[in-house]
Length: 277
Image 1 (cartoon, rainbow, N blue to C red):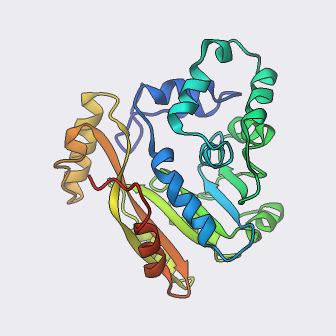
Image 2: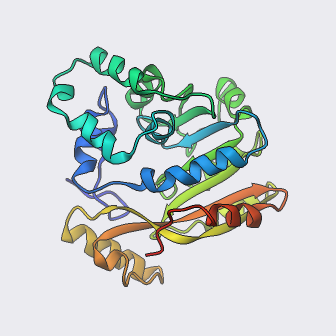
């Protein structure tokens, strides 16, 4: 597979298929599990928000992975088992959609919106019932249109589990301008969250980091590992004991209006399990 501009292997081809089977078949090979590590933190954010049924926007949601982990009461390993089962691989797309709708056990805790540049991934997640609304847009380039702005006004919480670094402060501040939602972003250590935090500060946000590090996935090759370690070293980030051992790691940042980010970070810091690295 080719490398992208960040030095990582490019998985772009798996985000545009009509259903998520190629996505999960490919990512299982590299042990992609940050949605599972994020799951208890997303649940805690939902529980902590004062809205009775908050609306959560997942930035870079692809096939609604984070929403499905919440709504289907499942784990990422069970998701991999599901989508790589030979019987499931043999299903038509319509049969797979029916099977996925049947996996949903709870839609009461939150409403889930998804933002992504992949129309096929969004369409599947919406049809399967993982997402309630979708926003197909590139906010790096464009301001939200009137329909997208109306959806963003509904948003109480924003999460991402790997989008920041590919999307920048341009996207995040365009999301934040309307309803001033709480935010929690899992950001690979090779990327700086500072530009996002600085831009959000101009909108009245405070940012804090949650203790710990979070494994994202294994490196796909020694070449990828060498490139990423080189990028980390150049950025002054020590890879010893983390990326040097064969996996990509992320940090968790929370941004919240009204000076409450430190309290929110402390609340999330008490979530278990947390990987300390």
